[in-house]
Amino acid sequence: MVSMMEVKSYRFQAEVLVKEYLLADGFITYTSVLCGLLMCKMAYDMTHLVSSLYYKKYASLTKLQKIEWNNRGMSSIHAVFITIMSLYLVFVSDLFSDRLFGPVTIRSSNLSTFGLGVSTGYFLTDLAMILWLYPSLGGMEYVLHHLLSSVALAYSMLSGEGQLYIYMTLLCETTTLGVNLRWYLDTAGLKRSKAYVLNGVAMFVAWLVARILLFIYLFYHIYKHHDQIRMLHPFGYFLSLTIPVILFAMNLAWFMKILRGLKKTLTKKQAKQQ
Image (cartoon, rainbow, N blue to C red; front, top):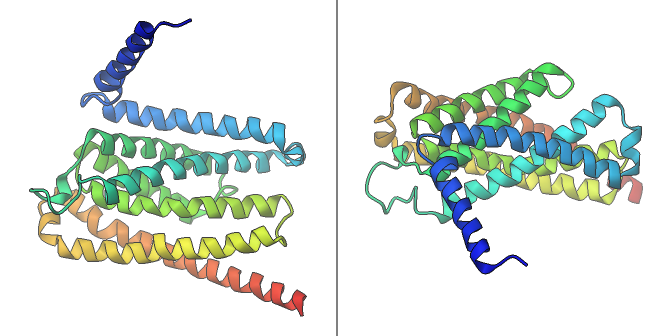
């Protein structure tokens, strides 16, 4: 059996590895992006493995459908990770609290920087897949979205500026789970199921909260702290005022599509019941 001394020694070595290398100031930007890339690879392969073992129809999917199936598994795992990270840093942690002294726009920590690095690794991976298989995994709007996200994430990670606004924006990834589930149900031939309708309603509510109402609060926060935003580097100032507006416009356009789709689905549902 493993002795208590050996367990303590292992824990100590693990803590040293995390503190001295994984979350060390000099390595964190590199190790975090690398962790994001590795997370994508592991999530993609894990989705393929689990689906092959437990979903019989997976084998009958086309090669392109399998790639998108695995890609959406990858994006779902990133969505869970970054949603938890964003909720903690924005609403639970005191890192970005107004109660603390100093501009909120230039605050960062090893943990917040690490989270941005992981997300940068994901967006770069997903962007590469979109471009490689273009337009099968998404059109030009997805390319634009991922390019803007990657630039903003990388800048904030490297400079430490505007991390609060990045994490508020990353809460949008909450809706990724519903979008992916909708695609999975459609691909599995369950478009007419009750689960598909319920997911559509949940996706509508999540999109309204995370991509519309939250962005309105984000704009209010930017307006309220504009004096602090002006302290940023000119490029950081430019990103803080332009990227949220562009993403919000894209969110509105996608929201209207979701609303029309939900209306169409509910109308068909009601027609069948009559």
